[in-house]
Amino acid sequence: MIPKSFTAATSEAGVAEIRRMIARHKTWDWLFGLLGTLALLFATLVFAALFGQMLINGVPHLSWEFFTSFPSRRAASAGILSAWVGTVLVMLVTAIVAVPLGIGAGIYLEEYARKNLLTDIIEINVTNLAGVPSIIYGLLALGLFVYQFGLGQSIAAAGLTLALLILPVVIVATREAIRAIPQNVREGAYACGASKWQVVSHHIIPYSLPGIMTGVIIGLARAIGETAPIITIGALTFIAFLPPSPFSSPDHLLSFEWLLAPFTVMPIQMFNWLSRPEEAFQANAAAAGLVLVVMTLSMNAIAIWIRYHFRKKIKW
Amino acid sequence: MSSIFPLKHAGRALPAMPARPWQASPAQRIRRRLAERAIETMLLLAALVAVFTTAAIVAMLVWESVVFFRSVPLLDFLTDTQWTPLFDDAHFGILALLSGTLTTTIVALMVAVPLGTILAIYLSEFAPFRVREVAKPFLELLGGIPTIVYGYFALFFVTPLLQRIYPELPGFNMLSAGLVMGIMIIPYVSSLSEDAMRAVPMSMREASYAMGATRLQTALFVVTPAALSGLASSYILGISRAVGETMVVAIAAGMQPNFTFNPAEPAATITAYIVQVALGDLPHGSIGYQTIFAAGLTLLLITLLFNIIGHVLRKRFREAY
Image (cartoon, rainbow over all chains, first blue to last red):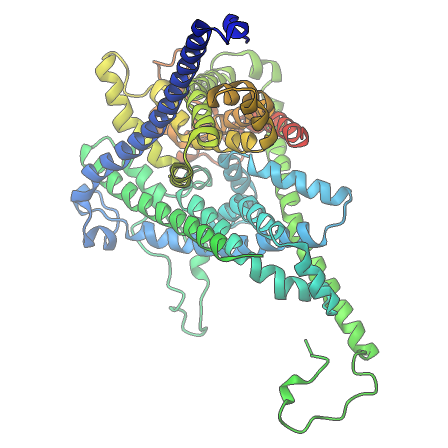
């Protein structure tokens, strides 16, 4: 786009026109900056509306009793005891399964894998799994864990489902953290006679730990809020009891009966209250949603903080 | 792991050194090599879990769908416009569910694509460093909110808001579900798009500035075209996410299968149908139980298609420079 006046830039009028053109384009620049700011503002407003609405409806219902009561037919006395205990136990199973598998797979792909067909297949599968809708994992779990393995609608089945769901998140975070470690760290260790596993366990894992932790926390935060796969495995929504305590067994130190116990989790409890016609239960749903959002947001915030903090600290 | 040099004994009487202290005994060497092998195998097995998961998903969905398609002809499944598998007069037309999925997805894209793109251009080319440092984690947080909470927001905030403008709008409708879903995938679209724009080399921007272009001209006519395949991949991955989204539509769009493309009507999506069936108590092995696997297979194929296109596009923008 060459303005007509370009050749006449030396003339007084030409200079004035070029000045006007520059001003016009600068206005467009400014307008787009405004547009971007407005878009950001819109996102902020949505967040404020979402959070504010739950605060207004949910806070009056938040009390100590809300956390220590079972769900009930009466909205006023219903609480989330079985839900948060269920969430904690399911997350325990998820973390125990997903963290070692995810880190192991990430280490394998970055440090051990040779460039061959098998590696390509694994990599394609990891990227592909990250894009599979969560409800599909629920269908897999319904067929495989619930019926084939006979785990039933249990904590173990839910934990395994969510573990598979967040596995790609942990793998990708591990790989990115490992890739950020400069090659000379490895070369230095090998030069001292370290074996592959010594390099990995003494150097690679410790240096990539902040990145891995970030991924694990983000993955778990996602798992806490996942509703669809848990509904799909057919988890009951009215659970007014706790799973058997791991310390209840008389002859063993720890009992694992709770793994096969029926359960409910926070999002399921919230969904249950949401789908009730009575207005009073909507306040319960708001309160449960508030607890859920605070849980996931604080986990995400911790993850972001870890990443930010260590990015500043590590200087290769 | 035994150390070659017995450092633990420092300060005390050292034990007699072997003739060549740097050489491990053959037995030690074999043990070490075995341990290394064992660790590598274990790590490989961990990586193979991803492959097994994919295989299990495909096998499970295909297995149950094959049984389903034995009693329901594929042609009926693809052309019938009614989906009433649990009625006496059972119809199995996936189109009734696909229309819901398509409509909510289009509404979501109409929100997410413009806003996500504007945010990406703004954050990558315009925003001051400080704004970016705050805005990026903030958007990430928005993406981390559980989808059921977005569903609550759609049903109890956005729908009443829309009803004020348009009073005839039913309590369950695809419009509010789609709008909220769009807001939900903005962070996804904007972060992938921004990555693509960041990958455009600085020299191209500098060349553009040197020619006298303004920031906006550089962003729109240099950076955006260069990052186009990356932008397209972010939209397509956004589509795949919207298609697979469950809780927002299950809560806010209703669960009644309805062959319509009018966003002001309630309709069930594929995902909402699966939720609805799972909430009931269907016996394992019944035709109703098999329908959710057939619906799931359809869903998987759609998202797979979009994911493949998205990844091909993304590879292209990575290789461009």
